[in-house]
Length: 294
Ligand code: AMP
Ligand code: ZN
Ligand code: FE
Ligand code: FE
Image (tube, rainbow, N blue to C red; front, side):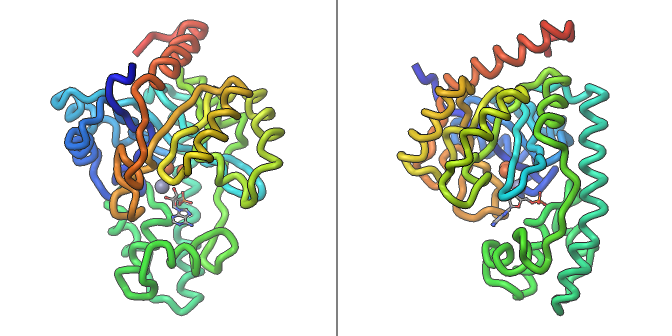
């Protein structure tokens, strides 16, 4: 049984997606998705707007977030699903990450200006539409001004780690991020594990094992850019480490060209079946913490 398709990884204008939360839900309806997780970076601010529209259109909205965690060598992103977004400790964590972005963003502007690029913080904020500012917004401004000819080129030349416009930002350790998600009654899922390392992953298994010790619940085994072989590989690792399988497109609208909601690069399919085990795990956390089921 599949009982239709879902997408457990997407971004709105609350962070670095190009559709508003409401537009994202409407777009989910045109894709006939049964459930969609709005997983903005470091914020749950889009969820209120999305909730009403999801109810109206009969789509299940999964409250979610994407957090960056400390990791050397590559990029670690953790998705949280089903948190109570009013939880005080969780809100404090998000505020800290949001403040870190506010400190970092003007420094990126300075570095880009140091490269001779005419860009202002106001332009970047305008490009962000008022949500959390991220590197794709800098890329958008550079693209609009003709300094680069694609979003990808903006990252390669200026914004990726090691490039002249890159600035580090504060991150929680994986354990801290996972604990914050659990504390708010959510499940923690490792996003796009291939970004952890540049080379195929001899170091991935020890890291996964450590993350499981930190409380990791699941791993993204279905993702827009995976080949069939990668999907099989990550599914095998999830089975081996008893991680719940998750999947999503990582849709960012025009900020990530070529990746569409629900279908990724065209071949993505995330079955509804994946959702229930994640939901059950979140319920277990809530019961064991004595918090209410939302
Ligand atoms: P930030 O959270 O501000 O560091 O920005 C991270 C976001 O930038 C990611 O979620 C991606 O959407 C985007 N991103 C990071 N690296 C690249 C890249 N090499 N090419 C295109 N987009 C990227
Ligand atoms: Zn993003
Ligand atoms: Fe990510
Ligand atoms: Fe993402």
